[in-house]
Image 1 (cartoon, helix red, strand yellow):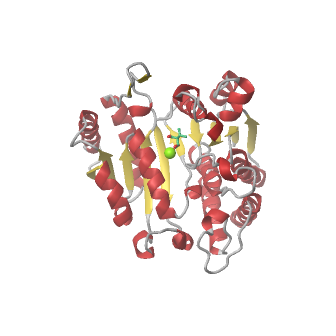
Image 2 (cartoon, helix red, strand yellow; image 1 turned 135 degrees about the horizontal axis):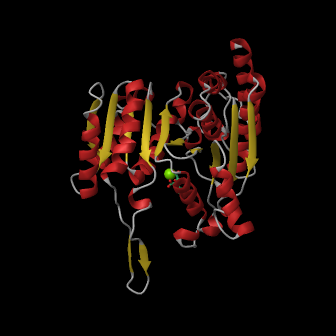
Image 3 (tube, rainbow, N blue to C red; image 1 turned 90 degrees about the vertical axis):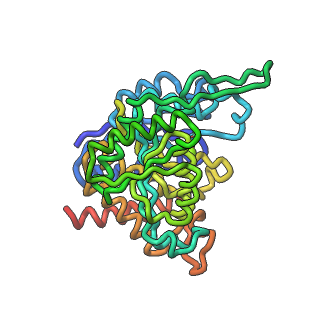
Length: 364
Ligand code: IPM
Ligand code: MG
C-alpha cells in the first residue's frame, strides 16, 4: 500500500500531537511493508509569520498532490485582532474548501476508563458512541454576503445551503448509519430558520432512500440538552456547519477531554484528518498535550484513505489498552483518585506505538 501524507502541523500543540500520530503511522507502515511518505508544510499562524499568509500556495499544492492531509491545529492569541480572512483559522477554512471534503466525521466515544473525567454521572455516559457528521463547506462559515461594516456599526453573515449540499452530506450520514445502529438524528432550527426547513426537507428526501434507517429531527437547542441528559440515545448525528462545531465541542464533555476526539473530512479530492481540539497555546511546547485525538485521526487515515481496517482497529485498540492500563495525559488526570501515572505527550505516543506494534505482530 502506497500513501502520500501531507502533515500540516500548524500552531500551538499541533506539531507535538501530529509528531506522535506520524510516528505510529510509520510504525504501521514498517510492520506491514507499506510505503507511506510524509512531507510537511506550514499552515495557520506559523505560515502568517513566515510566509505572510495562513495558507501558502505551496502548502495548498502539496495538499492537493497528496492522498491524505493530517492537520494539527491552527490559531494563537497574537492573531486575535486580525480580521477573519487574515487569521490562522482562515488557512484552515481555505484548505477545507480547496480539498472539497464536505462530510466531517467526528466520533465521540466514551471510554469507560475516562468516566471519572466527565462532570456527567457515569450511568449517563456509559456506553456512549456517537458519530457526528458535520457539514463542513456551507452554512454561516462560507455563506455570502458577509461583512463587518464599521461605518454603519453593523455586521452580517449568511447561513445558506442548497438542497444538493444537504443531500450529499445526508447520503454519507445515512450510509454510515446503515453500518452502525441504523439510527440517524438530524439537527436543525426549523422552527425559526428557512435554511433549516430546507435542510429538513432534503434530509427527509434522502431518508426515503434508506428505509432501514430510523430518522428523527431535533432542534439544536433541545439537542444540546439531550446530549447531556441522554447521550446514549444517539448514534449518527447529522448537522450543519456551525451547529456541528458547537455540538462536537459539547460532546467532548462526555468523552472526558477534547483531546480525545479525532475527525476525518471525506467526500472531496483529498481527505483531511484533524483532531477536534484547538492549538491550546497555553500548554504548547511543554509536553502536556494529549496526542490521542491526533493518533486516532491517524487511525481514520488508515481506515478511510488506505483501506487498512485491521491497522486502524489496532490503533484504536491500543489507545483503549493504554487507558485500561491506567496511563493518562494531564487533561485526563484532572480527577485522578487512583493516582494513575501521568505521561507527557511523547511518552503517551510511545506507549500507544509499542502497543500497536504488539497487536500487529500478533495479527501478522
Ligand atoms: C473546529 C474548529 C474550527 C472550526 C476553527 C479552528 C476554524 O473549531 O474544527 O471545530 O470552527 O471549524
Ligand atoms: Mg470547533
